Length: 421
Ligand SMILES: CC(C)(COP(=O)(O)OP(=O)(O)OC[C@H]1O[C@@H](n2cnc3c(N)ncnc32)[C@H](O)[C@@H]1OP(=O)(O)O)[C@@H](O)C(=O)NCCC(=O)NCCS
Image (cartoon, rainbow, N blue to C red; front, side, top):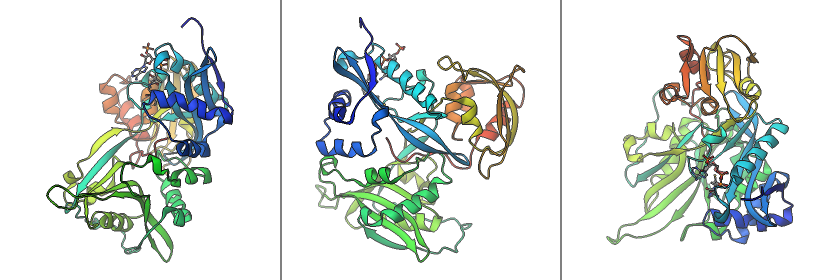
C-alpha cells in the first residue's frame, strides 16, 4: 500500500455501507433485518472504518461490556466486526484498527479487551490469550439419562416447567442470568439493549426449516430457577423414523435440580432424534449428570480471548483462590506499560472483590517469567499453567513460585461466555 488508510468512527447513517466490508470478508450477506438488529447494541463512537481513497476497506468496533471475573466484574472492550476487504488484506489494516481499538480501551479505563476469533491464529500477535473453551454437545434420542449427585441440596425440590415464547418471560430470564453472572467468570452482563438484541428473532437468519425461538422456564413459588432457549426443526429419515432436531441456543440454571429438570425435558421430547448445543461450558454439569457422558460427543473449541490492557488494574480487580506473593516478569512487546516486573500480592479472598490484592512495579528479581498472552489466558481462572509452561509461555525462576501463582489464579469453575459478539 502506498499510503495508510484513514481510521475514523462512523456515523449511524454509514452503518449499512460499513457492513458491506464484513459481508464480503465473512462470505455472507446480512439481510436488512439483521442490520437493524445490530443497530440495537452498536456503539457508533466505537465503530471504526478504515478508509482508503474514499472507500471503506476495513471495519472493527468495540462494545462497552462488563465482564464477570473471579469474584467480581470489570469493564471490558468487546472487540467485534473485525474485517478487511479481500482486495486489501495483508497490508496492515487489521494491525492499525487493533492498535486504535486498544488505545481507545486504555483511554476509557477498560483494563481488558476481549473477543471471539473467527480463526484462532489471528490474535495472539496482538497480545490476546485464550481464556476460555466451550464445547458442542450432541445427544441422541434415548441417550439422555440423568442423575443428580447425592450431595445436592434437595431443599429447592423439582421446579415447575413452563414452555413459552422468550419475550413473554424476559424479566424471568434476566433474573436467572444475573444470578449465574454473579459467580461465572467470562459472562457478559446484559442490560436492556442486550436483552432486546438477544431476544430479537430474525426469521431470514434462521437455518432452513428452523422454528422461531422457544423458551422452557424452570420456576417455583420463589421465582425462576433456570431456562433453555431453543429452536426445533422437524424431519423424517429415509427409514420413516422421526429425525427432528432440538437446538439449545442458551441454557442457564441456578441449582442442580433445575438443571436436571430442564435437560430431562428437552432430552425426552417426542419426535426429536437429536439434541444439539453449540456452546456449552467446558465444565458443563450436564456431562457429569449424564449416565454415559461419552454420549454427549463433546467437541471443544476456543472461546473468549483476553488481552490485558492495563495490567495492574486488571490483576487487582479480580479475586484470587489462594494467597500468593510473586514477582512476575511480563513480556509484552506491544504495550510497554504492561512490560517489566510486577510484584503481585494476593490475599486469597475468594469471597468477592480483590480483597487487598496489590500489583506494583518492582526491581526485585522475578519468580516467574510469562508472556502477556499467558496472563490473558489465565486471567479468568481457566488456564493450565503446566500447559502454558510446556509451551514456553511461562517459566518458573524460583522454585515453588509457579505452583503458588497457579493456585492463586485458578477458580472453582471454568470460565464461560455463552454468547458470541
Ligand atoms: C483477519 C483479517 C481481518 C486480517 O486483516 P489484515 O488487514 O489482512 O491483517 P494485517 O495485514 O494487519 O495482518 C497482521 C498479521 O496477522 C496475520 N494474519 C492476518 N489474518 C490472519 C489469519 N486469518 N490467520 C493467521 N494470521 C493472520 C498476517 O499474516 C500478519 O502477520 P505478520 O504481522 O506476521 O505479517 C482479514 O483477513 C479478514 O477480514 N478475514 C476474514 C474475516 C475475519 O476472519 N475477521 C476476523 C474476525 S474475528
